[in-house]
Length: 302
Ligand code: KIV
Image: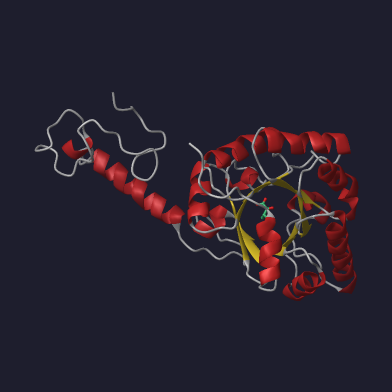
């Protein structure tokens, strides 16, 4: 069936900057995160290579492959989020040659349906960015703490401190705008520097650990929802504690199973409605695919 919503457009980035309305970007990696982030009112979804850490359990984003990105972007698009979807070009895909860069970008657009890619780094990515734009693939830039540079940076540290580093970041930001990027992620830089960068650019800045002065903000889905254990970094605000709620839910399930309180007749097939007060729908219905039943779904009604 035709989707009645307007086609997702990257125009929202320029529009929000013009209007002075903050952009809201949330990372998404699969069906459920895309459904939740879009229903929550995000302006755009970023399939970040942070998926390597929060979904796949790697210690850095470096092991994330193009196949990983395609796999997760396709799941995000299956949610039909109705929003622009931007995908990280993973480490190694834009470092060898412009031809390889374009091939990687094309896979994300053609196989996974993303609308744009994000490339970490400044001037040294000039050829990669030019090649992507030449292939009609819009590019978002990313400066400051670029996690793919973790080995060169010597860890995950605030960047752009000191006059020289500040000047360099402002130069790199101006370069990325001139190169044709439609937006720029600023990660873990001093708030005052992000304000200067934002004021100096016609394209929007999207901050993460860059203070309140950016044109928009992005958070990692798992951080925002408090899904994983451990103390989050200072720049994160956790709006929920879903990890804790999940543990409580599984604990309750385990107790119910061990005490034989679950399943009841209400959760069982082949018992009459009288026997099963609270049973959902008809005796044999398995519920909707999302929002009441399970995506994995189990059996379909005969
Ligand atoms: O990979 C990612 O999720 C990102 C955001 C943190 C900006 O690059």
